[in-house]
Image (cartoon, rainbow, N blue to C red; front, side, top):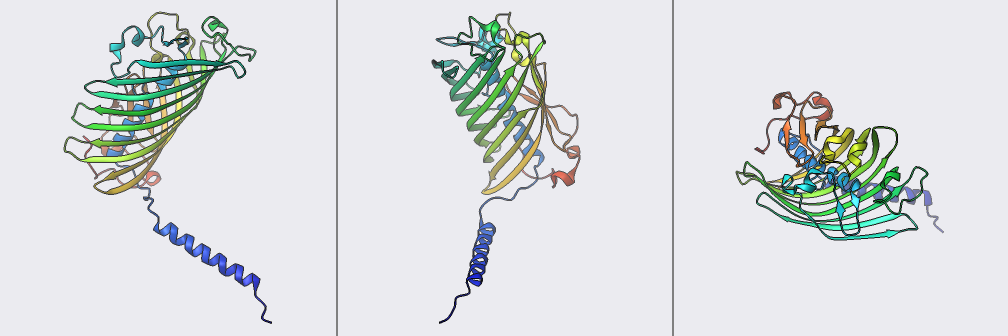
Length: 336
């Protein structure tokens, strides 16, 4: 009777599986990671600025919600300039369909609202879901965060924002976008002896976009942006929403680190780009956006997401370490 070589059979099977998996790798449709051009940096900075600014549901929208008064019928942004004069932020929109509930077992307030906004240069439809846990210095839940605001020492916050938006820019370019953003923030040291409270946490955003330039060039793509605080603080005065008109954007300082993956399709060709860097919150309503290994810096307005070059250098001097990031910055499309 012929004996089967079990060991040989296993080895043959393993080789077949490896060969098939190798074919899958070689034949997959994932685009190769390529270097970012100067135009890619413009687009990436635009998307990141949007992910920071209050008007476009970015980081500052979460922080304004986190530090507001969570009332029965509304979120009250008392002490914020835009609360008394909404025209200061015309693309922010108004909270609608507001609801609030409280779970005493977990100390969690759950807030939901929507923003529907239509204007000449911007429109959006966004659903927002927020969870707050207010705690005192002993770690006990604060069930009446408005009446007992002075006893709040820490806020644990989770925010989810999802929806669509459309923008028209001054140069004639247009962009439509969809996004899903999830953030977890913790604000500690409130009502203490220090002048600032400490913000820690993360924000992850996944988005899609279609951008049409003035010359009718169409760019479609998607991106994932992850941000994490390094050493961010907020002035105690800004978290006390009983004061005179003020802006939270001018009271936040520190550094955030980020990573971004950007996929673009232009004329049927899809490319994948990756970048990382830091965002320095300046405490004057702006942030400096930096790309690792590059000289290029953008100054971003945290209210509306407007941005400008802040490095006083041309595109030829963008790359400090071409070996780190690869490729050249010249060539490619003209983003305007």
